[in-house]
Image 1 (tube, rainbow, N blue to C red):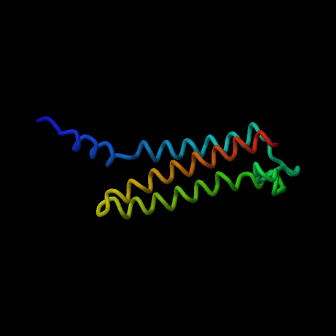
Image 2 (image 1 turned 90 degrees about the vertical axis):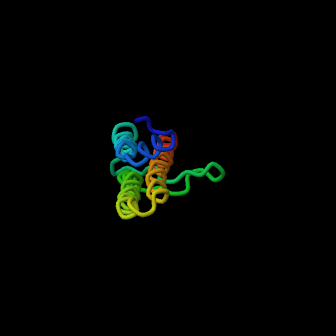
Image 3 (image 1 turned 120 degrees about the vertical axis):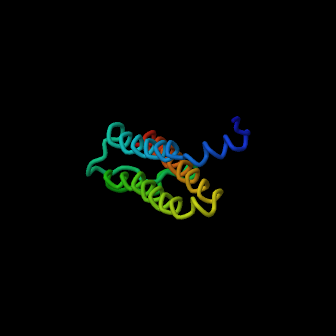
Length: 118
């Protein structure tokens, strides 16, 4: 029996474990990038950079770990929402996965730009 195109798409979208794994991989990459490239410690580093103004916030380097920590918290909340919505609201449950991936990518880009400043 051959599946239609929409049934194939629905099958791949209903098995989104690989998207959650990708979200976790991006978060781990962000943690490791901070640890190995920026080398945060107790020294003062730029925590927030704006193109127009320049560095706005300075603080301890260990505070940079809040960036991927917030990403992990957003993904955890979205995973709980995904589990609650996956049976009733198909589109909303998929939206939580894609929001988590987008948030991880934005936070990874923020850390990459902060590495240039520091």
